[in-house]
Length: 562
Image 1: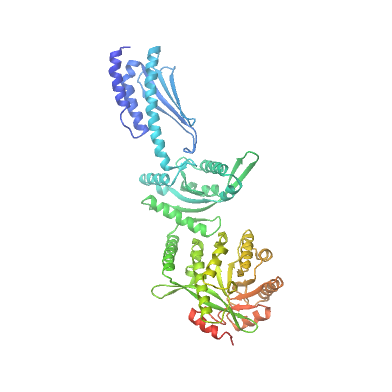
Image 2: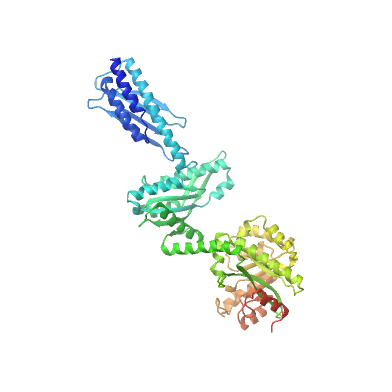
C-alpha cells in the first residue's frame, strides 16, 4: 500500500464524510463519493450498510433496510469484511466491505478499512440521532405512531403529490379504554394501548396512516377502496393482554367521523371535516359512522356560534327566568311553579329553549346555565320573603350531566344559603336516565338532597328505557309524567291503550308513595281526565303558560284558578 497516496485519498475521504447533511440519503451520497476516492487503491468492490431497528415507543413497526454505498464496475468477491454497531434500543447497523474478485485484504488493509468503517457508522449514527430527535416532535411517544403534527405533515405531503382525493379521512374515538384504566394499573393500561395500536396498524396498507391525537382519539388516512373495511376493522378489535396472574381480552369499538377528501387545499380543511363529522357521530350516542357534508358543517358552526354567544350572554345576564304555575288538580289552587329559562337577545328577541338547551346539553355548558337559573330563582324567593309575598315551592331543572359532579349537593346548598332561602322552597328536577347504571349515582344524589331538606322530582318519566327499574331503585318525592304519555293531546290519541298505560303509571307511582305531576295539560278534557286518574298536580297551557316574573308575582296574589 502506498502510504503517501493513501494520505491524499484519506484527506479527500474525510472531507466528504464531514460535509454537513440534512438527511440519511444525502449522507449516503457523500459516503459513496468518499469511497470512490479510495476504492481503487483499496481494491473495494462493494460496500453496503444494513440497518435494523426494532419496534419501540418511537417506532410503530420494525425498520429494516439495506443501502448500497458503493459498487465498482469490476466483479465483486464473496468474502465480506463486516463491522457492526449496536444501539441501546436493540437496533444495529452493519457495514459490509466486499473486495474485488480474487483479492484478499491483508491485515493492515483490514485495519484501515475497519477504521474508516467506524467513521462511516459514526456519521450514520449522528444523522440517525438527529432524525430521531426530529421524530419525537412528530410522533406519539407512547404509541410509536404519528401525533397531530406528524399526521398533518403526512397530509401535506399527499396533498402536494396531488393524490389526496384517493383517500378518506377518519376521526376515531375508541370505546372501552376507560374500563381498561379502571381494571388495570396505569403501566399495564399503557401496554394495552400499545397492543391496540399494533392491531390498528395491522389492518392498514403501507401508504395509509394512523395517528394518535391523544388519549383514546385517533385519526387516519385510508385509501377510498379500503374505507369500508377499515370501518369494520376499528369497530370490533380484540386485544389479548397477558397479566401477571391472568389473561384478559378487551374489545374495542369506536365512534367514527369520516370525510371524502375532494377539493382539499390544505390539511386544516381535512381536520375540520373529520372533526365535524366526529362531533355529529358523537351526538348520535351510538356506533354509527357519520360522513361529513356541507349541511353538517353549517349545523356544527351554528352550534359553536350558540355556545360562543351563550358565554357572552351569561356574563351580560341575557337569560331570564319564566315561571309556569303548578296547580292542585282537586281544588285548582296554585301550589308552585317550574322555573323555565328564556334567552333575551340584545335586540329584545326571545330565543326559545329548544334552540339552545339541546346544544348546551351536549356541550356541557348546561351545568353553568342550571346554576344561573337556580341563583335567579333563589334571588326571587328572597324577594318574596322580604316583600311578604305568598311563598310556593319552585322547581329547577338540573341536567343529568351534573351527576358526575361529586360536589353537586354542597354547591346547590351554598346557593340557597347565600340567598337565605329555606330549603323546602326548592325542588330539584332530575331527568330520567336511559342508563340503569346511573340509577345508583342518582339514588345517592337524591338521598343527599333530601337530607338537606330539598325535595326532588324525576322529570320526563317514561322516556327512558328502564323506567320500572328506576322506580325501584331511587327514592324521589315527585314523579313528573312526560307529556308524550298523556292521552287526548298532540302526542297521544284517545284510544283505550293510551289511557290504560297512563292510569297504570299513576296507580303504580301512588302505590309507591310518589306525588304525581302531569305536564303539558292543554285542554279541559285533559284536566278532568288527569284529576279523575289521580294526578296530584298539573301544569300546562290550560291554566297558564310560563310567565315573566312580574306576571307570576301578580298570579301569586290570585292563586285560585276558576
